[in-house]
Image (tube, rainbow, N blue to C red; front, side, top):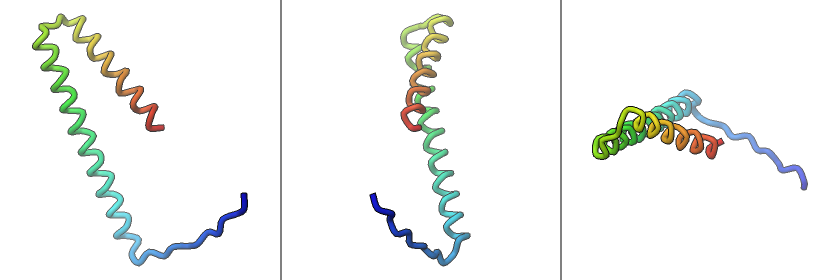
Length: 76
């Protein structure tokens, strides 16, 4: 494989780029938190509809935790 030529890119205003990245990260965090709150609400509804015991709710939360862990590993 041959070395690729690297070209430098100039940006007119680094501050504007940094602010754009900050806003993008903040929007992503908001979306993640909203998705998480929806998932928690769905779990609460499921537990209530099935009239789950405390032990069953704990197991439901453990299963959800594993789902999030596997999802995070897939992002790495």
